[in-house]
Length: 216
Image: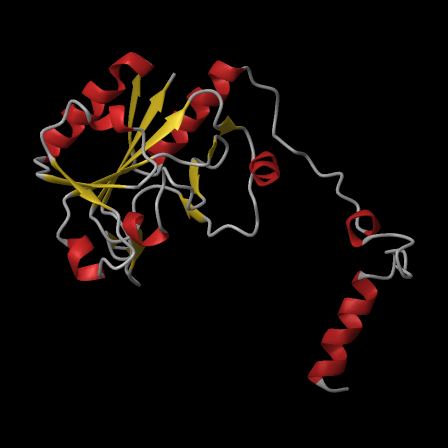
């Protein structure tokens, strides 16, 4: 028996209890049971947001909380603490979010090169959804988030999450809100990797510092 035959045999055995789909009688979504847990445990809104903050911090993201009226001052303080003189701004970002900062605003332009983006001190974006159980922020390229490149090249990323509207408990709940045709970026903490000796190095393929503002 060849390796190919062995693998195909395993696939057939795994699918032996799946009803055969004939034409449009039974779509694939119904042919495979989807009765797994959609979230682990029952949590209040406050507990879900608390779990998100805990898991973000566990991934070494810096978490801030503020009221909507304090968001501009909070972002300005974060940029000042970083010593940021320039900040990259997606085209659809709320203008009021940056009204309190003196940093020079750099527009997100399609023709910007990675070298130009690398010279920017910080980038501020919104997000599409945040997942509490995994501590993950998802961007989908909407106007207030900009292109994927702008959140991968600058070394400092500030991401604003609207609470509780953009916070869900689990990955299945997040997927229900996302358009699979959009260019999604899933972020769990700052960019990091480890070598064979498990020495952690941050900023290899994305921002070295991720700061998340939970506003609501």
